[in-house]
Each structure stands twice: as structure tokens, then as C-alpha cells.
Image (spheres, helix red, strand yellow):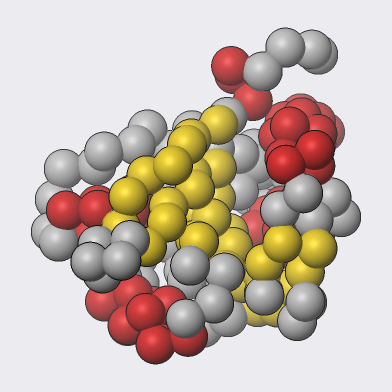
Amino acid sequence: MKLYIVRHGQAASSNVDPQRGLTQAGRAEVEKVAGFLKPLNISVDCVWHSGKARAEQTAEILAEGMTVKEGVTAHAGLAPNDHVGPIRDEIESAGQDIMIVSHLPFVGILTSLLLTGTQSGWLINFKEATTACLEKQSNNTWQEQWVIGPGILKGD
């Protein structure tokens, strides 16, 4: 079982866009990550996002280059300050390959909880459009497989 945890791309300020959708730069950074992911032939059962415009737009861009069996959907419990425990439990019980697109601090806390069993001390610096791949091991622990972000990819 694989879990892809993604922080949304750069969002507009609420002064410019009350919905806080992706900026042009935000779209470009998500497209850069999507370009990296596409040749990996990633297949997930579903893509969940928080329902906020920036997360939904990020999810849609990433999903274009993957096989998504059940679609891209807004999912309760993925807001920036939601508790991660219920989502962790849902991921565990689903037993599916899932991509989650959310926000800080949620993505950092969820990743820490899955990898260490605690919610303190972020292990991954989730800059905008950063994507982490975790895989559940046979002993029911999670292991980080890779992390990618637009800052380490070539191209403009």
C-alpha cells in the first residue's frame, strides 16, 4: 500500500483571490512535479484533497499524469488544522493506494505520525508542491520511499 502526501502549490493571497487558488507560479511548480511523476506510471485508487481551491487545483493537475481509479474528490478531515488521527485510521482501514493533497501543518504532522508514531518533529520539509511517497511495510510500519519538490527539479 502506497500513500502520496502532497502540499498544495503556491496560492494567491486572500487580498488578491479570496478563494486562494494557485498562482501562475504555483501552477508551474505543480506541473513541474507532475512532469516528474508521470513517467513513474503511478496508479492510485483515489486522490483526496481538502476542498480548498489550491488543494483541489493541485490534485487535478497531478491526477492528469496518473491512473486514478476512483477519481479526485474533496475529503473531510484534510483542512490545515484538522486532527490527523482520523485520517490515519481511514488510510489504514482503506488498504488502498491513496494520494492526499492538503496543507501545512497537516501534511507534516500526518507524515510524522505515520513514520514515527508521534505527531512531533516534522521529518520532511513540505515546501509548496512537495510530494512524499510512503509505503506500508509487511510489519505494518510506514517507510519513506522518496520525496520530490519543484526546487530540486530542473527546468523553469
